[in-house]
Amino acid sequence: MADHSASTANFSANSATRIEVYGWTANGIESRQCATLAEATGLLPRFRCAWIDMEGIQPADCAMHLEDAIGLTPLGSDTLIEGVRRPGADDFGQITIVTMRSHSASSGVEFIDFLIAPNLLVTIQEKTGGDSFGAVRERLRSPTPHLMRADENMIFLLLARSICEGFGPLLREYNDNLEKFERVLMQRPDASMLDRIHEHRRQLLFIRQGLAPLYQALSSLHGPSVRSNSTSQDVYARLAALRELQDETGALLDVVEFQKDSAQHLLDIYLNAASNRLNEIVRVLTIISVIFMPLTLIAGIYGMNFHGDPPYSMPELEWKYGYPYALLLMVVCVIFLMGFFRHKGWLGDPMKRKKDSATTPRRANDGLRSPTALILSRRRGKNNRLPL
Image (cartoon, rainbow, N blue to C red):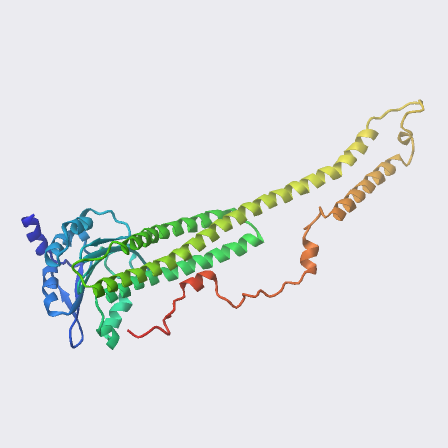
């Protein structure tokens, strides 16, 4: 264990990794690029509060050093080393580990680990080349007085919110696509739309797998998270940040569930439309068959060719107008059946007259945003966000 601890303590960043420390002092917020993790943790005593941001580093590579540097329990260290990579939250005494799955345009999908300790926040990212924290870093370079008074819980909440906001463009794109699919399905069902709807539903299920476990884990932390070695104010601040993240996650889950139900609704629309189209085809074929049934009967009767002098023979066979008479009888049968079917509404669109006669009123919610936009809209938007 000692040898492994020593090797981890000397863990250094290669060209593909980045270790940056943001420290809160009495005069401002300092930013330092560090070559080793030991160098980053060595700067902690000079700061009131600090954020260690690491990119391109596996959690298992730095777990043992964090155990010695910030007092991470062996169970927490083992969680980082051998834990299953899934979103969640665990409480290990004074340190809380939160794992989130981020969806960003720059780095794609990745897991980000948060270690919340007294006066310290550590973020571990496996990928490099971009993340969801760019806006937070820009705010730290030009901090407001309120941001100068931030603690580790507030920093964690800012970073977690930035990850949640990264879901917004993706979910809005899915919502727009689902609305397009609905318009196409209403006009004419297409078999190619079925695969696209299924693909969207699979993507929504994948996003839900990254939100639902985190929401449940945050809910479980509210009860047993009273720490005997912390003040009530520290406990309240930590719980308030976790509860706010739970609300953010719950809002995203509402959007995902709504869109998943919409995708299922579109599948039902397609199946119903396909069934209705099949019924229309069967109806047309049935009408054609019924129209030709009396014609076949007439042709069959006069095709028996019973000649002779008996009184019950066919007089039309010897009549010079017999052939025009048979054709006229067929035309009369067709006209009668066509008129009967149209009177019953079996020809054309049965709802056509209702569509033509009814006026389409303007919907009362035309000026409202979609449910997805309403759920994704925050109390503090980008234009009216409270200064931090």
